[in-house]
Length: 233
Image 1 (cartoon, rainbow, N blue to C red):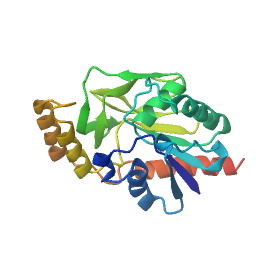
Image 2 (cartoon, one colour; image 1 turned 60 degrees about the horizontal axis):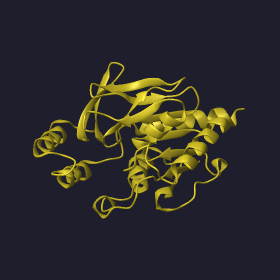
Image 3 (cartoon, rainbow, N blue to C red; image 1 turned 90 degrees about the vertical axis):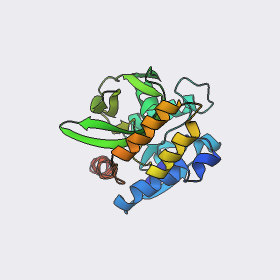
């Protein structure tokens, strides 16, 4: 099984010391997905999007960009997502991936009035509650037709989506780890975060335990289910 990780995050020495977005996603997903070959496609670094049929499924990374930014790869990415939907090829989105999928499939994402959120937050999925790392200012506001909200938080009502075709997405970052988030809080203090906000963010990662394999098995099950259903047709 071949899965491409579409890296939409530009190179940054402060973040790349922890690994590129593709490497972080691979470290998170690979232990639960030994049957898959995970390949990073670094679109934000100038690599062309593949043809949809080149891989069995796709993961979209986060990005420092917003869906509204005039970035050369955003419109081709939207068309790519439409092609995936038309060809029934499964795709899973994280953070910006969550937002661009919603925007492409008939919903909307934009900057929220909550400010820049960094740290650990609690989310609800049905009756289950879990903690996850977050790093974003934009959110999905309008749910696309045919999509269902599968996780939410008081600060982020549309924290995860499941579509009526092979697509799922989450606003939080299941691939992140504590050192990366802690370092980001220090990096953003005085810029995107006030001293008070930074203190609250540090408290959040101290007070909330985040599973290192958060959502990994759900993503594996998502790909396996949809790829098996395609092969049965």
